[in-house]
Image (tube, rainbow, N blue to C red; front, top):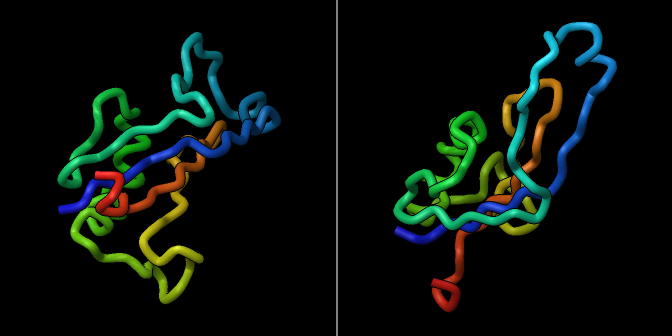
Amino acid sequence: MSKVRIKAIRQTVYTDLMKEYENPIQHTCDVRMGQEWISENGECPAGMCPSAWESMRPFVESLARGEGNFFDGWMQNPMSAMISCNDGFRPVSFYLEACSTEHQ
């Protein structure tokens, strides 16, 4: 299986939705933009948000097996995917990419 690089690309914050629907909370997301992880053998990397992992896990596992080309050519790089976590108030977008053999 290949390694898969996971990079936090962008976070969007919907303050209007938070104000209308969310209960005030002290602690939200620890992910920093630009932060990277490496998944080995399709497994969750240390320090990855469990909720974000559940959103991306099937794609990481597929990329680790050498599969790709999701949704018939969705991504410019067929061995990649752009996946967002399931936080409806402050979703983070993650770029997933199978590591080339030279980076393994």
